[in-house]
Length: 52
Image (cartoon, rainbow, N blue to C red):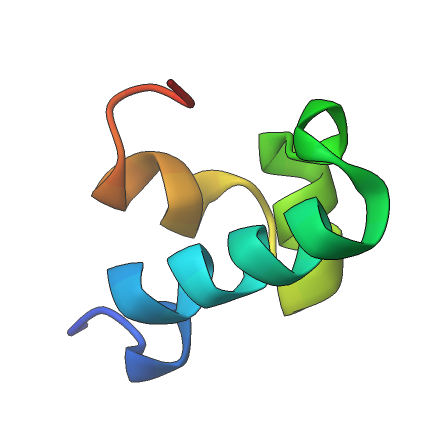
């Protein structure tokens, strides 16, 4: 099954930027991003090797 276009690296980064503006850099975690995206942490870790 092809990866969902809903969870593209660009969309994940966009949500990370929103979260940073709203709550600060410390709030940006894989779980927080997944919560905002409405997915598990799987799509995030498949696109990004680390959260750094």
